[in-house]
Length: 141
Image 1 (cartoon, rainbow, N blue to C red):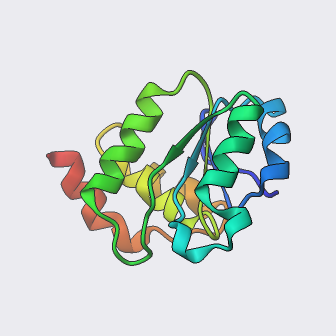
Image 2: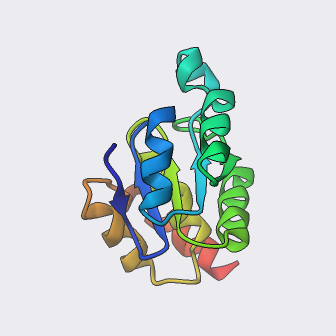
């Protein structure tokens, strides 16, 4: 497991497994967001298996599948709603953490400066520069 904090209350990770849930809870997270569609994973890494493990560890498990290269406003709104409704720190995961970084940045447009929304994920190797214009547009909406 490779947790990459973007803020004090939001972190991303590459794919996690059921056996990671207890450590995620012990690290202080209260919510796990799955940004990876089931079609990308074998059965043991699909949402149902991870949901059961997360709930057994006392975590809230939410599903917001993001298709690479096809992020929707529903994805952005879903991520924003999950963050707003969480009772504590959130860990979001996908294949690499990139999609979880992108939907976070888009969901935070207008709440944080664009520079920060690009720079925080960049510390972990995620390049959000191509989303600058979209972040700026959402910030104005």
